[in-house]
Amino acid sequence: MARPIWTGTLSFGLLNIPVSLMSGERKVDISFRMLDSRDRKPIRFERVNAETGEEVPWKDIVKAFEYDKGSYVVVEKEDIASAAPQTHESVDVEAFVDRDDIGIRFYEKPYILVPGKKAEKGYVLLRDTLASTGKVGVARVVIRTREYLCAVVPEGDALVLMMLRYPQELVDPEEYKLPAGKASDYRITAKEREMAESLIGSMSAKWAPDAYHDEFRQRLEAIIKKRIKARGATTKIKDDDAPEREDAATNVVDFMALLQKSLDTKKRTPAKKAPAKKAPRKAAKAAKKAAVKKTARKAASR
Image 1 (spheres, rainbow, N blue to C red):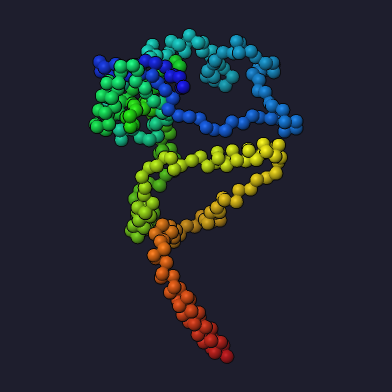
Image 2 (cartoon, rainbow, N blue to C red):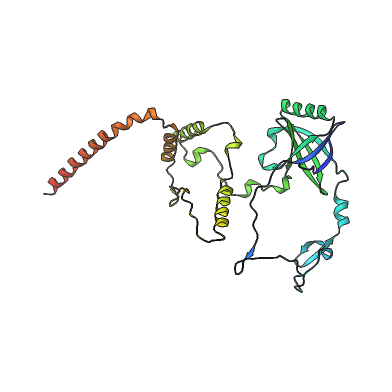
């Protein structure tokens, strides 16, 4: 069973709810070891003195801040401890804000708050009140000597603690060259807008997270299994399922054609295949017309 990161209280106003802070994510990345390609032996990374090249034991390593090129000031453990808040076992809600007021770029990492014994009433009271009002609690929490900004968010039966980024950690989008102005400034026509809306409408669906999987990880696992079975063979494994982009060779995009093609693909049903029978008649008519023109050109050249 998972162990709590810490056990403390969720506090707002005069109400204190005993909770345990549990991890809300599971790492599924495939980890790799670095090997020497010549003999397939593991590579060991060592802590060495940049000046002498000698290995430095952990007990002799200190943290320092480089305030100028080659100039450092050592920061002791006591300095870090004194800068950390005294409260280590409390999620202190400072304000309640509308859920939509917090931009998606602020959200970083999820945790789950689990109520302690006989704390269910206060937990459910806060959870249901937040859900009915559309509010989230903005709070601070200390984890491993560092203070974090966070949001207490209701989700189903749970109160989720979402780590938030501080504004200073976010890059202002205005630092990049982004297309500003109205759609008309980019010659986007009403028809293109209408077709785009139709396409989005045809592709709209309810959010179903279980329908999405890390396909890259699955393919990589399959390759690793084949390697193990082949005892380290280096035969290349081709992925025949990777589709080629139709617009890979050019930057010129016909938006109307792409939108229409997308809509046709989404709207195509067995019942609508009947009009396809008219295609041969149109083709024959076009071929007849082309033949008449060709004959006329020959007569004119004589």
